[in-house]
Image 1 (cartoon, one colour):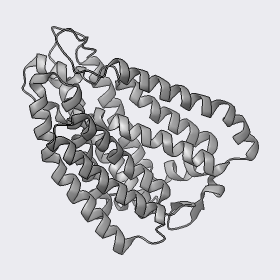
Image 2: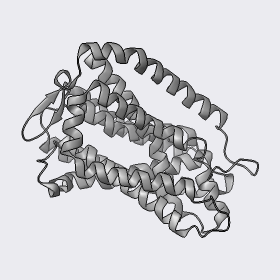
Image 3: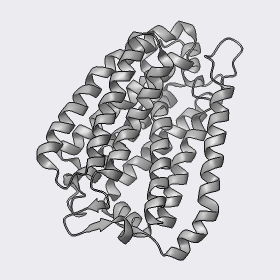
Length: 322
């Protein structure tokens, strides 16, 4: 049961990064479009139907982590509290700024735009640092600077490029026709730093990490394949293919953190934790099974229906949520 719920947690976590990654990417790319208010509202409007639905995946993942793996939750959140706090600050700033930016048509929006860009940037950096430390192994809790080691910093910068690539690929599919060309150029531009991140992180990890499983190696191969498909999709103007590939690519770091040393799921200087040691009691799994599986099915169906209803690019008749 522990392995099954670990896979379910992986599905929710990877789903969050695959979907919410383009939210943060679009937020960071907002200054790349003209200062014209209509263009910027269209850029944010492309996210409108998906924005809050994408965040639900994170809520579901954290809820399952608390219920199914309480020992892991305690060690991770307490061990990486600095990154958890910065992550929450970024998420709150980004989410609030997106929703409040256009509430008053006559108000100045520069501060809210800065909140969107800054919140998205902090969120991307925090997620990269967080997952980079999980892959490397959590440092001692009293050594705050260790969370910003060169390897973890590489992951932070890599996530910025990764989310920007995903956001640009999303805009190539959903933005109005007059913005598609710029979105494609941005996606191509961010492909190079993402490739550099993958190559450097893989080479660095080869000499640094121990206990890597075949599953972890497979995830790394999948990441390189996804980036290649994304670049081919952009080159052949198959923007939907590029978007799907970039979504898979954004999910790979979380997938790697969960499979790198499986069944060991957490490494720290004082202890290691396997999936069985992190799990809750079998009776709790039985109760969770009645709620978790149906909830995931509903989440998948709603997400599919949302994408189906809003699969076409924005036009003059589209409702701008933000």
